Amino acid sequence: MGFDNILGNSRVKKILRLALQKNRLPNSLLFYGPEGVGKRSLAFALAMAVNCERRRDEACGECPTCLAISGGRFPDVQEIKPSGQVIKVEHVREMRQFAYMRPMIGRKRVFIISEADKMSEDSSNTVLKILEEPPLFSHFILVTDNPHLILPTIKSRCQVLQFVPVGREEITRALVEKGCREDRARIISLFVRGNLEEALDLNWDEVQNVRREAWTLFLSILKPEKPALFLRSYGFAQRNLIREDLKITLEIMASFCRDLVLMKERGDLSLLLNPDYGEDIRALENVWSLERCWEFLRRVDGAVYGLAKNLNMSLIASAFYSLLGEDTHDRDNLSRF
Ligand SMILES: [Zn+2]
Image (cartoon, rainbow, N blue to C red; front, side):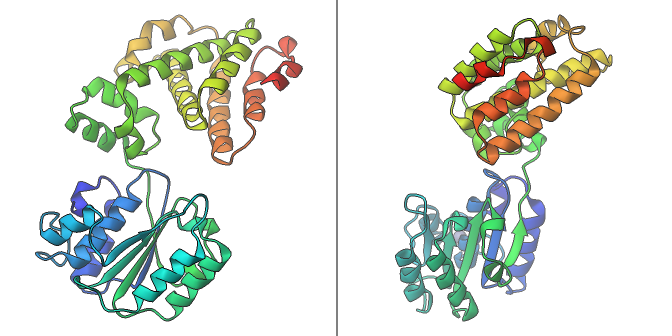
């Protein structure tokens, strides 16, 4: 798997390619950015490029070394990951022992520290000591979704590379290449927020189920006379969906609302995000003002952010609940969920 097999993040790939061409790859790198955008895959591709038998600026993806690395069978490339919720110091100490030894068969040893934000304090300090006396034959790639949890002293010793979400067009293309119908691929690309891995994992029947649930929830918020329906749907969603699914549900509701805005503003209907719900959405055209639609979209953003920060789900529900008619507030009901 060469760099080109990893979608998106062309800026990062360019920097790495240049460094490889000039034989100036830093000893330690920190890859950070949102979940599912290829940080770990690129770390492995880089480990291959460093050791590839055929190329120096890229991984050919086909030589025995590249294949062994992608299969996790190459002794000079190791991944360190959390066991449970934490990267234990004994694993980092073990890494340190190997880091100062010549590679066994490759040109360089590469250590990929996945979810590096989960290093214990001792682990972080051990890694810092290694980075302070960088071994000659080893590279370290720290990978994280949460760079603010990495010691600043570690960060300052790494070349820090930021990954960005994969574009919707690229996600759509990747899904189509995998055999997904284009109209479906477009819908999936809507609500994964640039998370390619998530997009590739979804199956269409599940997507349709979640969309139907999202539609029911959306209707219940839209119709002010139906707070009970909202509570029932939300309670249902909360009991049956894990946090991640709830995030997707929120994203889909936002896409329905964007379509509603498009219709209200007499926009080009070929731009509808959910063309298959077009008629249903049209029927709601006069239920909400534009202002209310924008307010709803702001709240979805707030809720998605809240979910990422592990906010209490009922707080998130109450943010939507207050969008329902003023007279129908009954916050006590929320405590049941
Ligand atoms: Zn190769």
